[in-house]
Length: 159
Image (cartoon, rainbow, N blue to C red; front, side, top):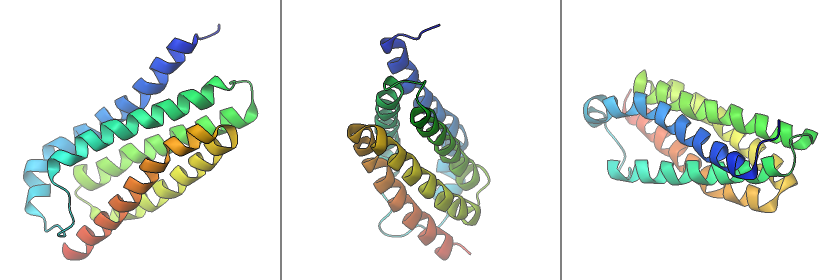
């Protein structure tokens, strides 16, 4: 059964947004309680910045995945790139669970390093298939790099 281009686009956009929703289930309850009570560095963005940034990043991820998927599922490189994409997406959700759900900046810090590597591997795999798809991952890797620095700073000031 062939999936239409429009169906692929919808699926590719919805899957990352759904991952973001799953992550928010761990995040939202902690924002006003645990996260509000910990010490944060001066460069921490206001809480209201995070949701719009993540919604945008998940949308860009979805567009990138759609571009790659559109190049043909029968191609080994496409299947490999989309497998990496799904792994990094699971790791993205796991970070929220570790940091906000389990209140563990250390576990989240270790995990975000693995997430960063998986994002980079996904971005490289996407670039090999489509320059545009790879470039759509650039804001994501930059944001996660910033998040890793923020995570480290929070870990350091909250022993």
